[in-house]
Image (cartoon, rainbow, N blue to C red; front, side, top):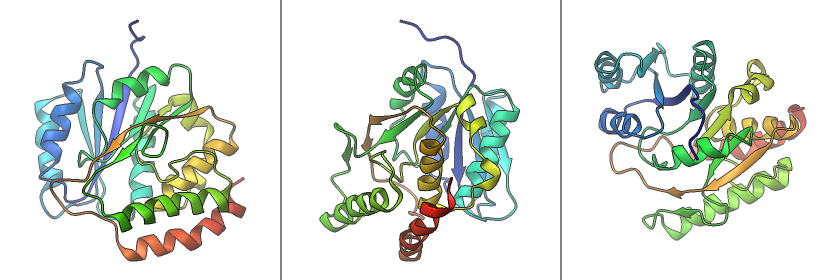
Amino acid sequence: MSLPARRTTIVLPTYNEAENLPGMIGALLALESAVNVLVVDDGSPDGTGEIADRLAAAHPGRVAVLHRPTKTGLGDAYLAGFRRALQDGAERIFEMDADFSHPVAAVPVMLRLAETCDVVVGSRYARGGSLDRRWSALRRFVSWGGNVYARLVTGLEVRDTTAGFKCFRREALERLPLDEVRSQGYNFQIEVALRCQRAGLRVVEHPIHFRERDAGASKMTPGIALEALWRLWQLRYLVR
């Protein structure tokens, strides 16, 4: 069954993703489900922003670039992208990494699910989801344990609390108080998931295989991980 035509925007936050961005945008534009791409670049010193501009010039109407002069956090980048996508009339808005860790092939499936759900989560921990074999046993344990801890502290029902691959219906994002979101990094994903749950949105998890990046450097640091742990207690009581 064919899907109704929906204006879909995929928000890609970038910081030093010059090696990944051309291939990522090429893969997204090649999907059978027509999507637009909004690159939100935080002043990458490796030339990612300039590459994005060239791709936008090569694909007018399909690729756009939002340049932010300073890097203030992943959450701020996504919020700026969400607001721009809504302003441009998008009916479906994705958040997605630019490093191929999230499977491009899952986009059409998530769009189909969004016909009956408010938010579709590309989930590593839903039944059928999986992690790259290159992940060490310690990394797997920390990731799994962090998700369990986040669910216990906040009461979240979604299994992949820090999932950065989501599809929102326009109406769902409009129901969220985006101006009140303060978290960055992994806690941004947890806060958004918590606000979705407390707003009564219909959320479904679609299992995905999470792939380790092949190029570029991870943005994860021990400091980010530690901050995520104590910030959860703030979210538990501050998010209504």
